[in-house]
Amino acid sequence: MNLLQMKYSKIGYNQDNKSVDITIFKNTKIRLELDDIMSTPQAIQPDGISSTLEFGMPKILSRHNVHVLMFEIAKKHRNNALGVKDKSFNLEIKDSMIAILFCFTCLEAYINLLGNDFNLDTDWDKKSYTSIEKKLLEVSKAITSVKKIKTEVEEDSELFNSFKKLKYIREKYIVHKKPKYQEVIKTSYGNTDEIITVINAQNADWACHLVQRIVLSLGCCIEKREYIDWVNSDNDS
Image (cartoon, helix red, strand yellow):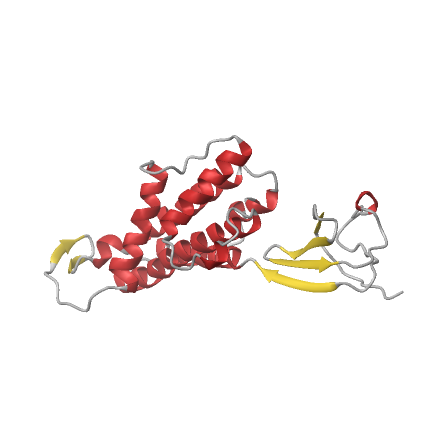
């Protein structure tokens, strides 16, 4: 019998009785698709980080939950922006820009993860041209329908409008910003254009808190803690 030895922190036996999910880092999952598992689901009792599992030779799949890494990057640069001294607005813009960008991409990845993991739509992977706002609403409605618990993410809700605002900032002031001359205005940094009034430490901090609010609103309706634990992590590196 071939043995697979693996160190893990979390393990979950899937409902199809044909696969096992093992979390080896907080952002990495291993899935074992099993042909001849030696143990019954009830027999799989992890007793710590260094436990060893014995299976017949499985097919091994891996998935990185990149939204976790994205949020850590966002928080790191949010903290950098908040720590800028002497009104160095170029440094603040740079770190705030990175934080805001990664907050949005984090949420985009997380929404797609929920849509995929909970089979909200058999054609979910084909919805590459569906707006992320519509996807967010679909995820929220599906979770509400299945769990009978209402999320705070509804059309015209404050949380949903905040998500649209984050997308607007990302598109107008970062990703699709037009290279045009703009009128100089008075700011707390001196006379400059308007970008520092939007791409700043305050909005970077707002964006990070928005990620937490949306994830907790959706994830708290889901029984699996792995879908929300990462957003409360203190690791900003």
